[in-house]
Image 1 (spheres, protein in one colour):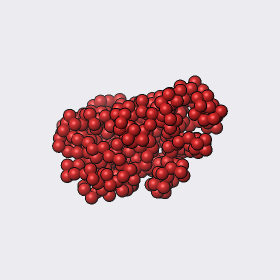
Image 2 (cartoon, rainbow, N blue to C red):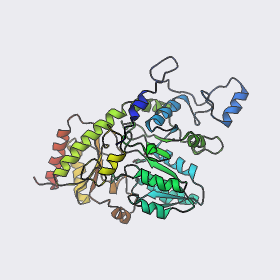
Image 3 (cartoon, rainbow, N blue to C red):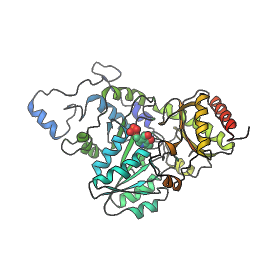
Image 4 (cartoon, rainbow, N blue to C red):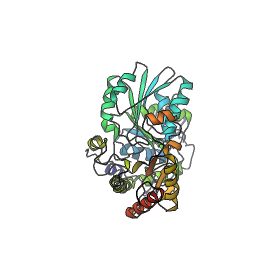
Length: 402
Ligand code: PLP
């Protein structure tokens, strides 16, 4: 276990509004004035402290939020984007050009998988998908054209833990950038401390926590973030996935409660995972001592933030999964919806939703079964009640004995 405390790092970032307000003012301008043409010309060449050019480049509130996110991941710098996919696509396009290759984990979010498999080849960038649970497969897939290795710290939807230190050794030996999507485990895992070069989040999920916006971020060295915002060649500057200022302001406030939420999501998820296991169900939760990922997550996680709030169970068939999802919504367990990190429990069937971009035979090969049900466990004050409601549904469907 590691003793890095991202929450204190964020807490110690005191930001003041223009009038000493405890929250920084929301930037309501797309463009900014200069007192001299000389300063304007200089700001096109490099970033100048306290000087803003145009909101697609930077604006004060996006800068405040980015600085706080850099503290979350203990990075030199960060940049906010309009979505998690914008963070992923901008990073890939900044690092790779035609002829380059990416080695990616195969069990990743379906949108990322589709971008890698269907979109990047149009630009001459090829992606090799490997089982990242076997670092030797990464080594075998790397060639002199590989520019980026991509993994999710906790994979979606099978909740496998990536051995970031082992993959990082391979990346460093070949001078390749290791990019880690840490969407499922903010604060729980700090990939940069484990050897990753770039960390990405879909802030749509845990970081925001209220399912009211889509947003993303990239955390890395100052050099990499500067390259993204370069006016002549930066992917975020030129593709333009800017986060709206109003959203940046609300995200900054939500970020300050993330540590409390992650703890509670994790406690509730652990309670349910242990109970489900006792019922004899096939449970995927890295915090369970019986999980094959337990030792690794114990080694790499930060103390005090649990094991995240995502659980998956395998109920055998899609029909049973579908009945369970429908009934749980009727019983007020939560919502039948994709996404995660919301204060209420969300559940879905990944094979028929967030992972449906992955062809069926590949789903089977990676162990993603038809009967898989994924839960993003909420902040329920009474998690026992949620358990009673879920088991009531399971009994009615015949998943467990009445
Ligand atoms: N990464 C992961 C692990 C995700 O689950 C998602 C979305 O579901 C994304 C990235 C994409 O993020 P966004 O929807 O914010 O573009």
